[in-house]
Amino acid sequence: MSVPDGKRWFLPKESLDALIAVLHQQQYVVIGPVFHDRAIRLEQVQRADQLARGVRDEHSGGQYRLIDGNQELLFEYVVGPDSAKKFFFPPRQELFSLHVKGEQFVIDKVGPAAPKLAILGLRPCDLAAIAVQDRVFGYHQPAGDEAPWASGFRCESELYYTQAREQSLLIAVNCVRPGGTCFCASWGNGPQVNKDMPYDLAMTEMRKGFVIRSKSRKGAAIISSLSLRDADDAEVELEGLLLQRAAEHMGRQLQTDDLPQLLDRAIDSPHWDNVAKRCLSCGNCTMVCPTCFCSTVSDSDDLATGSTTRTREWESCYTHQFSYTTSGPVRSSIRARYRHWLRHKLDTWHDQFGVSGCVGCGRCITWCPVGIDLTAEVESIRRYDSRDENHAPPRITVEARP
Ligand code: SF4
Ligand code: SF4
Image (cartoon, rainbow, N blue to C red; front, side, top):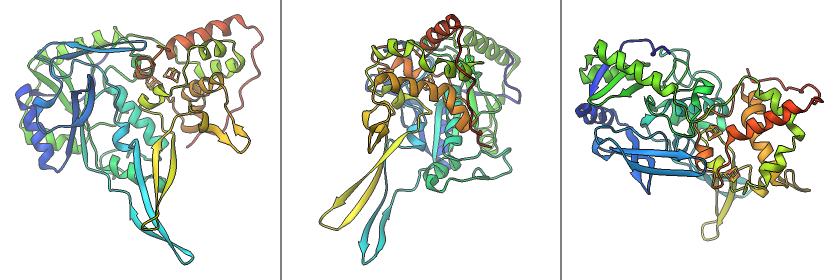
């Protein structure tokens, strides 16, 4: 495996506070991984000593636990239940309030402006997920740093997402110890960043510090303000070895080259009944997934003021009401809902957005209360498929987004 190209510097551990201070000087709200509620969560930090130092995580189907790690390491864990999604697409968001005056709607209040965030500690799979959500919410990354971040098509209803992304600064930390449910390498989304991912700075952690590179002008400006030395040959070589080892130790694997065709053929697979006996339809997998984007809106009236507030909240395709129409729910069984979710992620997402809806982070496996494992379910479907000689007719595709 090749180490990402480009100039590399060395950021000593004791300079992490200087990095955070530079971000504060530039008016960023700094977000980083902290130990909170027996999990690694992404929260606001003021100093490096608030980061989750010396903690490792263990992941398997339906299981997550933190154990003591190396006190010299700040990023020894893989991922927690949070991802950048909650900052760009908040779980609950008041969109606006209005009242009726005569025959007109009068806006009383619009939702808050997006904060200017610097998110530290994102994993390469998280960056891949941000790139997926950029497509979902109509936010186009520029080809280079010259263009403004918001160039290209905008979905006007997603101004919050656009604003949050435009002013964000993304600092990735490559994975040198993948978790038991990770399969980002199967998608080419890890364990290290690649040039197609949206990031400003990317770091690889070592005992004494970080090998760090920039991708954007914003990232380069931060590096130059820190007066860092170049990474030496030994540090660059060690980075390559660490990333190579990580790529060889993924917890899970998934054959990804034929998934849309496989899942189209599997529309009536007996395996859907099998998984429906285990799935609780709880929706955990959709809540922790960094690419899932379903939401619902509700209106609440304030009788004292006559103002109505519209609120958007995350919703899950696993809930009974999600597909409810006047004639009842379109997907009334768990079999239908699991099938819809898996096919959307791995198959029809390609038709809608031109990419997979899965980046291989493994969160849906870890946080499924009954340990349903996307990679294992696909392999079961594949086994049924290889037994079936009467494949379904060829798939009907819709035109992919440009
Ligand atoms: S489907 Fe599962 S593994 Fe894939 S991106 Fe979502 S949470 Fe991660
Ligand atoms: S697959 Fe697991 S997490 Fe997802 S809805 Fe079913 S039981 Fe819940």
